Length: 241
Image 1 (cartoon, rainbow, N blue to C red):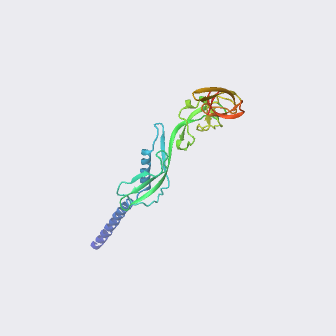
Image 2: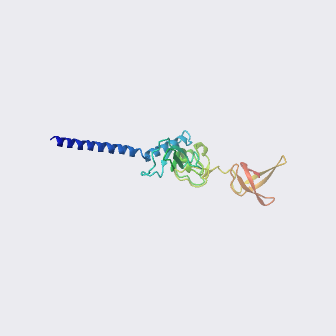
Image 3: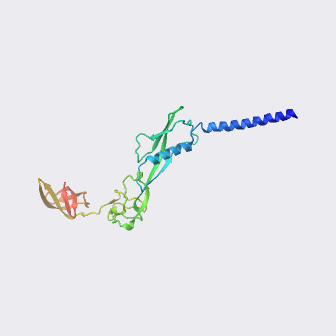
């Protein structure tokens, strides 16, 4: 019975040893490579800390192209991270991760950054030529990096403006789809002002297009029969440029 007991004890010890070896090996392998989740958390924390935003804005960060099977050696030192060259703090689309311990590595990580901001948008379809009222407007969240034509933050800034082209409900208002109301109408008689050598000369002309404050309007000079450019300076008044 004794040899059998020794034999069983030997195999029991061998099994325990193998299990410990497997667990130890798994621990080593777990620390052998950086995990996708760890790298993503580093990138997200860095972007959130450094991207500029207003108090009423919030940022979402999506890390792209980090394969779950990525094989980057575990970095014994702190991983350096920076924005990719050419990226601005408000419109970053990539970061660079670098490990300086051996074996060293660096990786370029694309990111999608949204800076969500409350901007003025249409609450209903607003037709071209309509004069905007407060009831036409609502605040909506938009990624301001994609509002290439600008945007408005305050409803009071657009009330009373004229719609250049139809604005569907939910669409952000920009300086391309709204403008000031024309204070000079096409074919209206206007006073043309010419300032020269300290003198001011007034003459009468005929507007050949609608005119908006501080913008250029085409005006026919009846005496010379020429169409000239003038800047609208008030109702029915324009200054020759």
